[in-house]
Amino acid sequence: MKFDLDKFFENLKEEKIFSLFEKFLPWEIIKKLKEYLLDIVPELPSTIPIKTPIQENLFISLEREVIPLKEIKEKGGRYFFRGENIKGAILFAGCILMDRKIFFEDGVIVEPYALIQGPAYFSEKTQIRHTAYIRGSVYTGKNAVIGHTTEVKNSIFLSSAKAAHFAYIGDSILGKDVNLGAGTKLANLKFTKKEITLIINKEKVYTKLKKFGAILGDRCQTGCNSVLQPGTLIGKDSFVFPGVVGGPGYFPPKSKLK
Image (cartoon, rainbow, N blue to C red; front, side, top):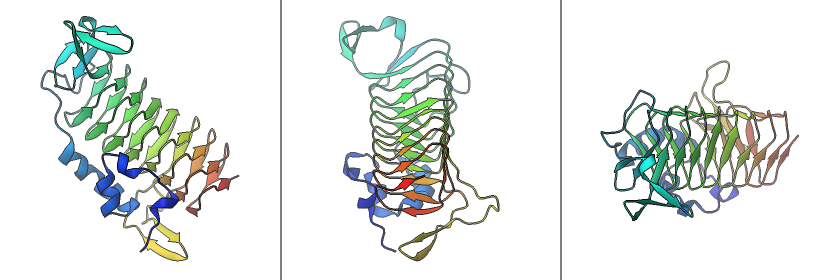
């Protein structure tokens, strides 16, 4: 079928996973994401402990050096080790990495008690906040936020997408500058556990997926405690009002779900 990505996303070429959007329909990407990440994500250095809380604040440089954060000097947002400017990610004590197929770009911060399963790729300045639960097969673009008590599974956050408070994002894609209000849930499984089908331009689409959440186009916003049902596609610049249960189905750009 023909699917108009322009109704959802504007700057996909800026994302490292652009090739997936070139080759596959968005719901097909959901199925391919784990395999893709396993191919591109290098393993963490062997000195990083896994499956146990990290005992001290660490800095992982882009050259894969693991340095206690207490040995790093910070000045004006830049980091120095033995007088040399270095770039990398900060892992705070208490966070847990469950395997080694996890990659952090420059400026990523992982706060205490976040738990991350791989494969996962976190682009520049992504924030993974206190007690976030990342269940694997997750990609974030630059400046994304996975917030406090937010659970993410098999999903994509494009650049500056934010789920800052108490959210659930399952088998979903968030466009650039999407903002999920506190308590937003992107449900991904029907009560019947049957295949999720879509109606797009009066055409019925069989996704071959039993788990598929939502696709939110660039700059979409959801209000607090809103819920999107499995198989909800919302075009760019749309709003979901607080407390609304929206979908399933396709909603064009600039929709308002009240």
